[in-house]
Image: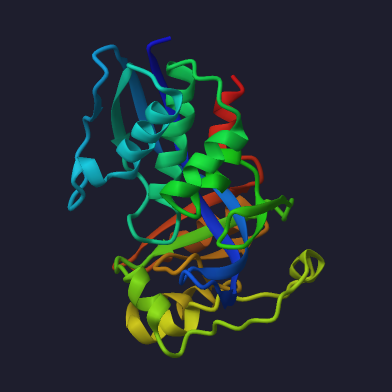
Length: 279
């Protein structure tokens, strides 16, 4: 096997609370990650020369700073190998939208290189490496919908309803650093239990601040809320609403105003990457 083509799926945060802050500045979270069937596509080809090369371009991101390159380098270092890899990323997920695209791409590259280089690393070992790249990487490595705590790395499998979603990208980006630093952000939510979430409790604490930072996000949330309860994912800027059938979701997405990008996605409690790796 010299080439692998694998998906790097998006995620939604079905709710997102901040319950405190560690001494190192990282925020403590409670959230539920669920995958959707929209994904970047990543092609990894064995490079016997030992080089790690990103063949695709990503606007504003130098190859050496790209998480996919960092992921391959990290695994190579840990496995003490002389092999390399050529990486091509076909981007389908909006960048900076809270859908986890960069973290997901990194997780897919870890899995792809683990197979191509025959490293034999377990999911737990890959997830531990992934945490060095970003707090969201482990959930993409493990590939199951999860209740997450800590900085997002303490994962417990959960099985929320696999709804159909309308996802809207309002074509604006929010600075993650800026929204985390805003004075009005709620950072002291009481911890809730999984059972409380499954009964409908929980919100996204970034939503009020995202509304203040972007009228587009505020308008999109209100527009989508006409049809079903809408919610921000991650720290934005994408937002979503659940529907109980594909037909209903398609009907709504056809009405999305032209200034926004809307699409229909299926919730998945096992990620498309995990399914692909099993074949």
